[in-house]
Amino acid sequence: MIVQPTPENILEAGDRLRSGGLVAFPTETVYGLGADATSNDAVARIFSVKRRPDFNPLIIHVSDIESAMSLAQLSDSAKKIASAFWPGPISIVAKKTVDSPISLLASAGLNTVAIRVPAHEITQALLRATARPVAAPSANLSGKISPTDALHVQESLGAAAEFIIDAGRCAVGLESTVLDCTRDIPTILRPGGVTTEQIEKVVGRIDIPNSHSVLPKSPGMLESHYAPDAVLRLNATSVFAGEALLAFGKGLPNNPDLTKNLSPKANLEQAAGNLFAMLRELDVLATRIAVMPVPNEGLGRAINDRLRRASAPQM
Ligand code: AMP
Ligand code: MG
Image 1 (spheres, rainbow, N blue to C red):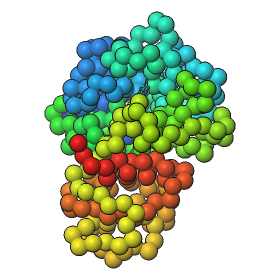
Image 2 (image 1 turned 30 degrees about the horizontal axis):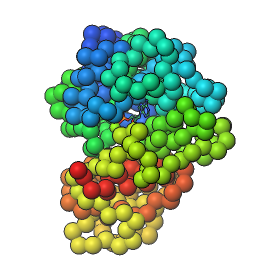
Image 3 (image 1 turned 90 degrees about the vertical axis):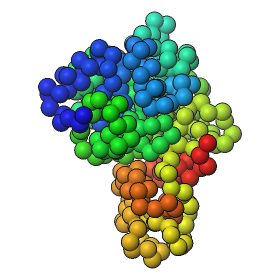
């Protein structure tokens, strides 16, 4: 059921979460599928609905830094990151507090936890109404394209998405950056809505491991992820017969019928906001998608990360 974000519906969503139900809700990054993070049963439902492998921990959403600090021990660099970017599209991995109430399943048995304070006003209202930490991955089947619209959630999860709060299109359109702050040098586990350049301005140099060289500490690090059914061909400068085109900027190869342009003006924010929705649209129309190159800077890193995983062979 898709509902509008009225005060009554937000209160109902909070009640549903507190009694162990699932609620799909908008954030500035993508739509999330939330559960009470302190309840093993509720969290187990997320894994089952998404068909998500249970070694993949979930991000825990809270309304403010104080709540985050009751769940995790934020290092000095974590505190700097939190005060610079929260509320916003970055998740901080930190050591759990000794008496952490978070379900072990939510953090996949790790002694660390990923926490985020989202900025979207509806997410904030929902978190306040729930008054519990909310575990929420993206509201789609595991490995598939993340939803940036309430309808995407319904298409992906069907009847299992019992209560979907609709607040239109997500502004950022890419998942949060996941930053591991448990190490001496903060390490990017998943590039996302806050760019490497922005983070380095606050804490100095950070580590950006090559995802091929590290074990998947994050599902965002699994090779095939964010995947459409269509086969993607990256860095295309021409279009082959039968291909649709996901374009960026000007100078399109000629393919007027099946072209979506991420950003005709080559703006990376706009491209990030369009990426998942346009992949979904082209996926319905074609079995092969050529993708024009996107510059690997700023949000372009996260865009290229998602495109690379969307093009990886599926298991
Ligand atoms: P998703 O829920 O699909 O947005 O993905 C959440 C991301 O956060 C995944 O890449 C997780 O592996 C990562 N994550 C969550 N908790 C932790 C943790 N304790 N340590 C490392 N990564 C984590
Ligand atoms: Mg996801």
